[in-house]
Amino acid sequence: MTTRKTPYYETRPKSAGWLEKLILPLDRFFNRVYGAKYNPIYQSGTIASLFLMMTIATGLYQLIFYKLSAPYESVAGLEAQWYLGRWIRAVHSYAGDGLLLVLVFHVFRMIIQGKTYGPRLLAWLTGVLMIGIILISGWTGIVLVWDIQAQKIAMEGARLLDVMPIFSEPLMRAFTKPEGQPATFFFLNLLLHMVFPMVVLALFWVHTLRITKPALLPPKKTTMWIIVLMVGLGMVWPMGMLPKASQFASPDIVNVDLFYSWWIQAARFISSGWLLVLWAAMAVFMFSLPWWYRPKMHQLEASLPRMDLCTGCNQCKLDCPYGAINMIDPPMPRDDTEKVANVTPSYCTSCGICAGSCAPMIIGPPNRNGRNLLEEVREFQKEYQPGASDIVLIACEQGLAESLRKAAPEGVHHYPVHCIGALHTSQVEFLLRRGAGGVLMIGCPEKDCVYRLGTRWMKERLYDNREAELHERVDKSRVRITGLGRGELKEALEMVRQFKEDINSSKTPAKDIGDGEVNMECDTATGGPNA
Image 1 (tube, rainbow, N blue to C red):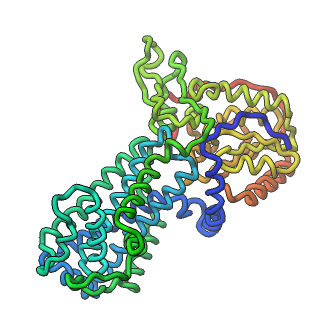
Image 2 (cartoon, rainbow, N blue to C red; image 1 turned 90 degrees about the vertical axis):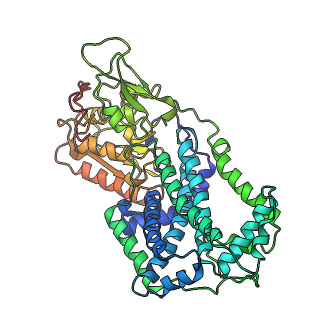
């Protein structure tokens, strides 16, 4: 096997690869069972959004029956509603637990994929802030029940706040009064419990502000199954009621919510001051991570458009996953177009997808626009000369490229690319015109593309006439594309073997018919098919 010599653009710290090994077996298992489209690992962000919607909806029903003057009794009344209130309360709690669990996993995935710094900094900071607010919202929700767990959380929270010189009187005194907690205490917790989800919704809008075509919910089938699972779990396994809180008792050991209340057990062994230091350290660690957890040799630069050659077709703007491209008036008056592409550098991740979308080949990161890419593939063909029985394996460096380089068999010419979506279809056409038996592209799964839309756009360029499309004159039986996760090397090698067999058994042998001409025009009227 031969491999083209190309610079590797590091996009994540090396330690991310070690962390990734923890979930690769699970990733592969879910792909086998559910397929990449429904793999829950790839849906962590949208599943969290669904859980948030479920907690808000079920919370509104409980609000109807909640009484500030009798919090424990009103919740017990809900629990007594076997026909509705009992399972709605359980769904509210389980969805809240699921929300926090999925968000923590989502953060872990972003760390693994290196999506924490640069243009993704805003999404990272708002995501961490959302987790903090959801934690506080969960604590206020537990306090509203006013059982012994709620009492313990309220008392430990008061001790934490008393460490800081904020209040004139210690808050712990409020829990020693014989008359108990006033209605204003529960009103404040209820107000915070209602307001915080709205703050999370606003942060979610900011969180997705710099991405185009954001998915807000999982696929319909996944959504329905999650709802059915939550409702079924709520009916079969209701929450029940712990003993009521008492001003004359201070429970040391209580049953706690493993997702929101785990820390109150730690409070038994360390002082409130040290517990506050640990919380502060966790916050500093998460918020500072983008500045110290990043590649040491990050060389990627924003895309550059050639405004003097831009046709104004709008396709690069449509394809950009991060909204980094907009159309502006030409710097110099032109008769052939009213608008030209412009790039906002602070939004650009240097994925190069715009280079693959541009028929005139005039936009892309430095030295990586379509014309550069075509020149690269010409050099590759000249050096390695793949023949009629060979295939060119184009693999994504964010996925299986490195593993395939070491494992692919003879007769396979390895052509790694920064992102499958950054490949220009003229490169594929050139390889086939010059006699290569076939071109196999292996990118990331569509739902887990590091640059969100790379694999999807390339499929549409090959088979659905999306600009810049693979022309009809190309024998598409000699082109194949798939998306596979980093843990699916065996599946990738099997696909390589099968594709090579299919090419070699073809009745029409590949021929070298010369370079040909590249079509550098796009549909300026519509901005490209399937836009």
